Length: 359
Image (cartoon, rainbow, N blue to C red; front, side, top):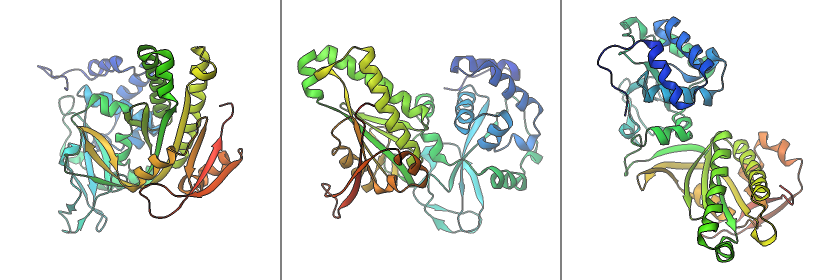
């Protein structure tokens, strides 16, 4: 819940509440200075990329800062929807649950399917309890120039932050709704031989090791620009915006599990062995079991591809391999490539196996 105050608080006092969110004190000071000295038009429907530039931080850091500020009642969140026909931006939406898979533009009456990584954008405004902005703060021409310079932040970027799910679990699509994601990079992992691990080490000890392995994967996904959407037994589904992010994360996860084996002194048949599969493509963002999830053929292919992994490797589809940014990484490895049949998929799929004998 947002913090409530009986009287209008001092901005610096409100900013000090960010201490509880592990926000760097220097960043807090710079954020406070920005809010104090910015023009009103800069504080109305603020583009997070503009803030990132002003504070000299990454987009993801700026989003984490804004989410902490949202939780503390310093800013408000807007889910903006841009009409692809006329370019008009609708600022009405304050909750993800208000969005629908079909929309109609109030300006030109065009009907369209808003995409979570395109037409749906996120902006923030300074909360009126800290400073009431005048009518002149509403400056569409200024916002258009900022968006043209930096690009808008898609709604999908917010869903790929663990902080968003942790701080605002109520912000989710309605159970019968979905939003199209034009391209998501999906990473499935699982542990090889986990059943035997439980038999050898016993359920409590094996479960402890599995939890440690989850901690590593969650950390790597977040640091790599993505989020673990769910766990399924010993497996995870992590989602990223781009193939290169998912590829880097998969490699780093293998290295993290290798280090975990060393720290826990796990050898031979007791070592944790990670299997990984990657695929990229369109899918639907949905709510399942009251949590954000992803649905569609792209998800099914990613899951089936992970099933081809033998451990200490990663299997990816051509959608990942063909990505221009990923080519430099693949150039450093010998790939084993094959066309395979995947259960439930009509056509053969070209997959590439990258072996990591010593992650």
